[in-house]
Length: 501
Image (cartoon, rainbow, N blue to C red; front, side, top):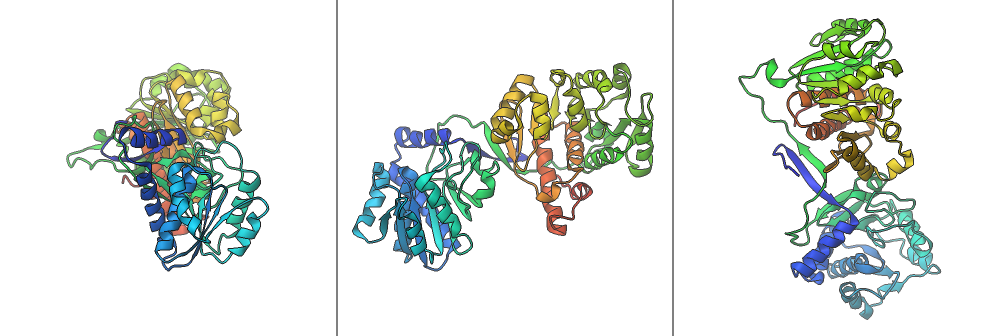
């Protein structure tokens, strides 16, 4: 990925990629597996001692494989630091590195082989533990936990509130690929290794992860380039002291109708706060009049033959827009007679962002949105389902790859809205986790539309404008929630608190 100096990105991987990186470090770079496991266990122990600074009773629930090996290793380290540690294991038949850590406990009375018959008893007899280490299942889970594993997950969760829960790599039951889970541990903290996994950031997995610590355990020089990232910071460059309004672009907004003029107003507020040099609204007469009274910084132009909504032919709409970027869609209403005009304007080569009613109107004609050039689309999952023909549940279960595939097929930059927003150009995918439940209100998307439009007008490439816009709005929403709580903030508060850093 082009690492723009104003963007801070962290790579994230799939479970398959994580396994390949481990094998590369062990087989190619010749780092012993035991060394990697000890590094992982040391990071887990550090987080365990942060959660419980004073020595206390600890239980470590270990599955098979190297995930369980990490659980045995951290148990050994904590025992050496004075903690009263007991291990419950689903198997004593382990790979060599895990076995090396398990064998220490063969000389103690601190291990129990767990079965469906004794699992509840083990949890009950250790209910006074102040820390639970969840090393039961790893990131490669492909089916819902059942039997003994389901019982142990329920047992770990039953200790929530009484004990801190520390998960190894990922909370047991969460898919590292897409965050899906039907039964999973709720962790206070999760320590993962080398890179975070997609499942840490996609809901519901993110909700189970708690505090996420990513700890480097080895050198992975020579691995394949990453294609999925999470935004960890973004800063617009300082403004030129000799700048004027023309320096920062001209945004044309096509938005609004009677009864939904507020959507266009919020879009304009987002654009102004995000730094567009000149802004103009192209809409019906009613909306143009509203702007004269509500948003004095924005020029307005009434077009079409209906004073209450945009009703215009393709030639008139295209000749009415000008500038360095377009923001299209919020508050237009869904009108099939507007499809030809929208098709024509989205086919213009000017950078653009398309949202809301423009997407819903164009979805009425299969393939219409694919005529868009140099465009960002910003659907929520239902809108994406209408555009793509994909099932909504399928989208929610696999948002990264489905958005990436659609972007690759259409040439669009897709910003798929959600508690974790996915932005992709078909090659790179960027996740934006900034935000607050306070933003789950009407108008938030209208502000986002204006912000992305303003960033396009200032010369950002579509992919960068999309994820930067989502990041800025998310951070503003977080700030609004800090000031006012999670119920009170409005979309206007998000716009008010927008910052470029």
